Length: 263
Length: 321
Image (cartoon, rainbow over all chains, first blue to last red; front, side, top):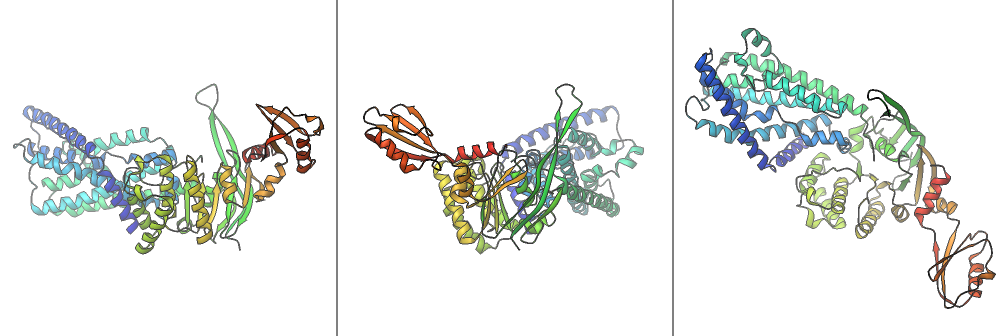
């Protein structure tokens, strides 16, 4: 286990090397957040929705703060697959799945924390109707953190599947563009899932994308009552198992069939 | 039981290339990278692995290091089949691919070493001892806290080598380790590899195009061409097959008279110097020297054997590679 933890720490360290990029990301996400909120405010002026505006604003800020957890890939790993540097990883006494999982998790966690902390601080100082609201209750906050951890684990497992598929297609950009479209739509990044038609929500909420950020945010805002938290965790847990099994299978097959060409 | 046993190894790749006309059709060619290759290596041997580009050298190194699964054939390294028992197998081997990077690009190399220590489960005491030894031998002291991306090619190569040896592997695969190194670093690296082999008993399999490396390090060489094993034996034996010509370079005080020189040797003029090429098997060297002395008063004379690269090029030509 220690080797995977060290790998995690190493990738964590690497993430802190790019503070400039993090700052750029924060500013970009803040502007994006403000624009989205302006749009919702305009929308509510014309046609109020069942969900209160303050809850939507909170939703938008949390989505923006953890943006990097959803939409970011370890370009280093992709390069290794593309150029054959993965040959070295195959020469290590580690499970490749675990090794990549640890790296992806460090990148996603560190990347989003670096951005989320200053962004949420900024958003909490904004005036009412623009800034992030407080959690529904202390238990709601704790449960949403737990949901966030499960969401992160799901996300990393999902990303590892993408990696496994890129090993076959070598160029991952096309495939990833498709996945990102699904991700931004069904994770609630563009439009909060609560604003989708009710019938749609029945399905969308069960999809894996809803487990990543949407589920913990609903716990935070209190839209999901505390009593239903167990149900949320169960769905997250099922998806996590499915993704890990699928990923392990894919990587196992890949390592048997992989050919690294050239010197 | 030998340390490495390879029996009838076969591997072929399908290489697709686009036809000259038409964008949607592709031609598929099968390349036989290895064809029935068999050999054995004993523990503590230092084996040189040569052959022209595309001969199958890297393919066999990849199979033996567990990265690639062969189409058919058997291989065992210290009792384990590399591609079936990858995790246990790679714990005991070290690999240097001269063309690729294993250390982390953005962080100081010592951090990468720490990670390798954990990955290979090296104890703290062993790690510290070994690192000191390697840092000393590879002259890395001043670089330990520098990220890889700020290093020159030669420095990077040395840092990579250190990374591959931290866990004191029993078997070391070196795929073109001296690529891009300056003369001083090259000599240091050779000295170091010799020491590892002699003192630690590390088995080393060296792939390179630098014949000087092979000549300096390996007593046994294996020649691979078109995926087949063509020679396996001592380097001097291999060279003597092709090393059939000698040259002597002479300069005279006054224009010489070469009429006494036998016809079987060739004569070239290069500035003030004369270059005589002959086959010592047919014409003893003593005889040639005696004749050259008859030709006039010599100012200077040097005997040269043929450049090893020329010999290998000739060998590849004659083997039709």
